[in-house]
Image 1: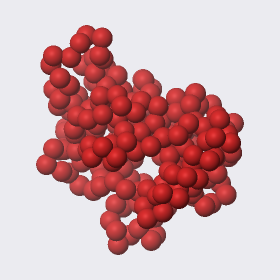
Image 2: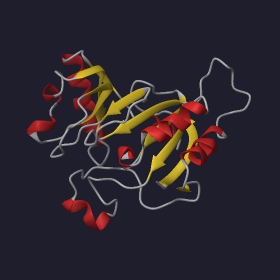
Image 3: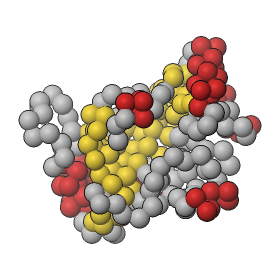
Length: 214
């Protein structure tokens, strides 16, 4: 298959359990919950997405071979990095599991990469992932019900997207992330209050936005 990638860049992970960790981000184009175009947002399943995943950007591309994409990602990792710092790739989107498959994961591993995915959980996960972070969305079927981290954008008004609806699932960590937008300050306050009242949940801030990082 041909892998269509919006952008590939080296930065610090800004969210969730691995916040602050250096990583190469591989943002796949396309999503099954929104076209990515503002004209269609009103009809989208996920209406609060803050990411541009449409098409191919100047540092993205189309890759006919898994090995070619793996090589491109590996070359962004600092050549002088310590051997103790295993190269880390975060596969995101859009919805990465529309494209990320076992062949590509194997190609990443062949390059010595540790492979993480950030997904909306509507697609089954291929074998071989090293870290699976699921971010459920209201009104979307949750098929991926286990993994390393469940990271919920909060608050979502729909009953089926409340934190208590997910606590029985087989995840190691549960993170609550304030929804961005005009009500961010109030959402941060509400998220902090929820985490304090329900200690199983950890606060996840979008630190890359606070720091002006990509």
